[in-house]
Length: 562
Image (cartoon, rainbow, N blue to C red; front, side, top):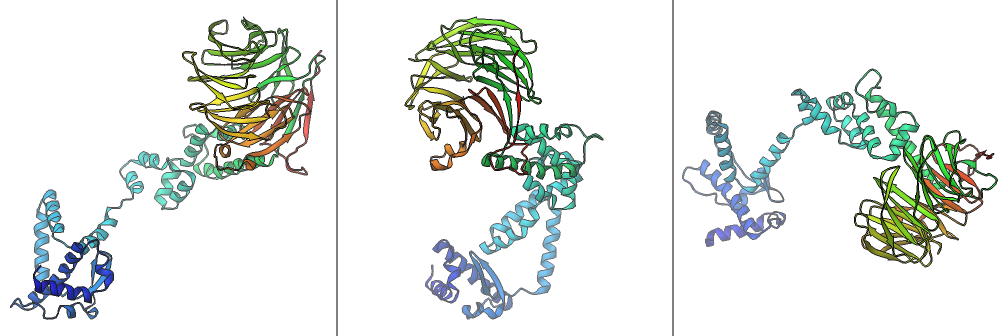
């Protein structure tokens, strides 16, 4: 840099606010910006004085009284900028525009690019501010104008409820697209397809009949679904509060018969409850009326485990056999004789069945049909009775009185690993995805990562053997020989930072004997006990009039076998 220019630059830096040149990212950028400022008065002076002499006082030219704002990196600076002769500028501008209009779009773009490349940084910022609003487009309004309403509807259909509410307030055109596209209906349908709680509410509250239908006279307008959505949210919040506070409506089925001393197992759906009893029978109950519909007999020992689908009921007994029954008629279709002692648990799915026994073995069966069931493999490795099994496409998981959980490959039936940690025998478990939850006679519940075998959490609270356990995405529900059912927060249990005292949400006490088996869904728990009862804990239909928290009046049905 020449000495004279350097002196002027330093003089200019001293006269300009420090926030201007200190805001530049580098010295080079500072000098570049200052050169830009230097060139401005010189150019104007040239336009005013044809002799080409520079302005004698550069600092005076930057005086605030000139009232011209220049934009540099981080803010405005005042400077003098006199426009050239108005007449010449206007004529030259119009001439340039006329030439510009004659060029092709490609030539216009190339010209503007070269023009922009010759500008200063502050000019780039001004152009950017000018272009930004020009580049914005209201595509939701523009698409219907092009006959593309369905695309606008499809875009907005991905919004959640809060965003959909905001979109309705943008303008009348957006509101029209949402209304005519029935987007509130589509949002509810999406939730019903993906969330079991929404699906259950749609069935129980009868608004499912307004979903998944094309636009007909039977389908309510979009406003109906708009008003329905907050009601559904309120129902969900009420159900969650009932679970947390233990508010429920209780129904009781008395299963006593002359020889019965307990209900060992059960399963239910919306229409029926099927239970296995110590008196060697299987009883089928109407879920609505709680009346006994049918009794299946044939086992010569207590019915210890069962599972059913739409076609068959499969049961295991202390008589060492596994029986297959037809659901509709109650006829015995098959009897499997393999285990040497009581069949303690079984699971079947997708053509595969796994049974376990007091004889310490696990049997893997291929189920081609109810009458065509063949033994594939016997798994041996436990040193005591195998009390429970579960499986999916990847792993078979078993738990035993030998205090261990063993993992086996479903496809090859080869042993994979052992999970150690319980201090006494393990009575129950459930396995899903990577998570195994087990209950033991050491009175604890453990959560395990099946892939690495690590124990993630130990839940303490039951006073006796934990006999049954189930979990979903939100909760763990356990039943024990202390007669209590406990509800635990699963997500908190998986968080190592959560205090142990916050994990048990509620303890339910209604059974007068050991709790043998339970199942639950988003709305209810159904449990069975040594006290010969089946209890239905309903967290959806709760009457709050005159009731204390956590307990509800119960209605009792007693079945006396003949």
